[in-house]
Amino acid sequence: MPLDQITRDMAEMLRFRGSPANGNAALRTLRRMLGKATEWGILQAPPRIKLLKEQGREIIIGPQTEAKLLAAAKQPLRDVIVIMQDTGMRPQDVFRLRGEHVNWQKRTVFIPHGKTKNSRRYVPVSSRVMDVLLLRTKGSPEWVFPSPRSKTGHVTTVANQWRKARQRAGLDPAVKLYCCRHTFATDVLERTGNLAALMKVLGHADAQTAMKYQHPGLEQVRKAVEERNREHATLAAGSAESPHKSPHSGEWVQ
Image (tube, rainbow, N blue to C red):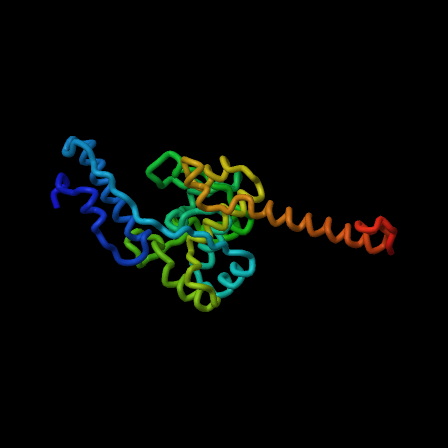
């Protein structure tokens, strides 16, 4: 269709295969096209394109699940999981890592890709990620995850490996590779309480976007319940050892 004939109603009639996230990728592309057409004076104003409702990525890959995945995963997926779990990087950022992006002294990785200033950022790396990077950059290869079969020269997907590893580990199909990023964000916020630092590492410009990746307050709730139970247990033990007055008769009972 000609750009000036595309309306919001027509965009809402579009149907896509796969998940809502897959459809939204296409709709965002359409938004971009219409926005550029307006910027170039082809359109007076772009129609508002409504995105599909996506299911939140709320599954956390805990220690036991991670161990199962790492045991079942083959390379390069195993190293991709480790890097995502410890840095919160997106899969495409991991695939495009180059040896020159690693700062060994400061123990950081620079991500130069992205449309915004926030997307281009430095990410701190853990000791086990440093070990992975050291092994993969031995001999100074151009790419951390090279692939001679890919036109780009690097790995572009591990989707097939992920499905097989998830099946071997006996995990629910709802567990996605992107859950590693969600796990990182959840753990960092609970342990630091520093939302600003988390946003910077994730490459987010606003707090609302970053909040999609955590369950704020759950750890505090768990600790509150544990503290309450300890207090109740202490009071119950004290009551059993000491005589006390009956609340009804006023008499002391043992």
